[in-house]
Amino acid sequence: MSEKNLLEIKDLAIHYVTEDGTVRAVEDMSLEVGEGETLGLVGETGAGKTTTALGVMQLVPDPPGKIVNGEILFEGEDLLKKNKNELRKIRGNKISMIFQDPMTSLNPVITVGDQIAEVVKLHQNSNAKEAEEKAKEMLEVVGIPAGRVNDYPHQFSGGMRQRVVIAIALACNPKLLIADEPTTALDVTIQAQVLELMKKLKDEYNTSMIMITHDLGVVAEVCDKVAIMYAGKVVEYTDKRRLFTTPKHPYTLGLFNSIPNVEEDEERLKPIKGLMPDPTDLPTGCPFHPRCPDATQECSERVPKNTEVEPGHFVNCLLYEK
Picture 1: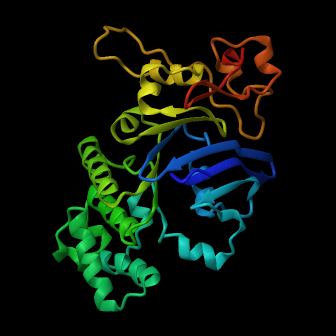
Picture 2: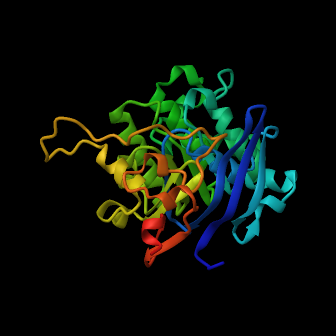
Picture 3: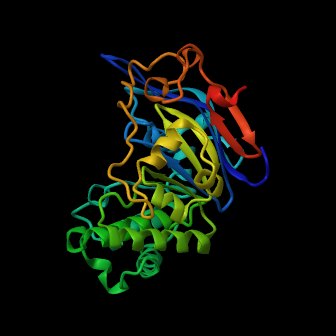
């Protein structure tokens, strides 16, 4: 484990065992997040992005979910070997998570100040007075006047609520922040503000971040490295510049082709044909082969290996194994 890696995921597999069969939500997942680095986790709905995050947080609902294989090394220690009490000290303190919808992440009958203070009291051994001061300070940090510390969630707009959620997540100055599509429920101008805020706070606090999104615009704005996920696997992993200038995997190319280009006068977009596979019944070989324009017979027979096509640029595709 190199010094600079805060989080290392190795060969992680998470399955949901249901009556309809086993959903292989995450399979052979390996990733690294360096100190102060932002990793974008990109993919369609159902690709396994949120399950990966819940795996890191040890919040995979069990049953039906089970982490069946792998290691999750945080600061060099395997989170999967820790007991409930040890995890409780890490979760919300060293690793925080911002969820998709701010309305469901906040308790409607407790003031926002008390919700921030609760985290501080729990992890920082502060008394009520100190925790309240910290709550006010955190509201100011995310651009909300401290005077609103006694307001309830319903008194805030969607964008403001998401700022409160960010304040709660950052209250203990975590080493790692996991943001699960934090701007999905917001309109575009507010999205830009929230992303700008997250970028600024990340730099200020030197926090590492995993940004889960299906929006490549968000990746361009916020991320240093990017992992493209498809059907529970990372199919391409590299830094942001390379991903945008020399994308390699046919799925990544398909994602870029389906974005409108301002400079070209196009009649229609080029969507990726077909649908995401049924997670209980994944295709043989490469999971993308039924939708892939470059698929050969071999693609349906053999699972591609992770190939380093240039230093730091990994692709799971038979085209590059030659």
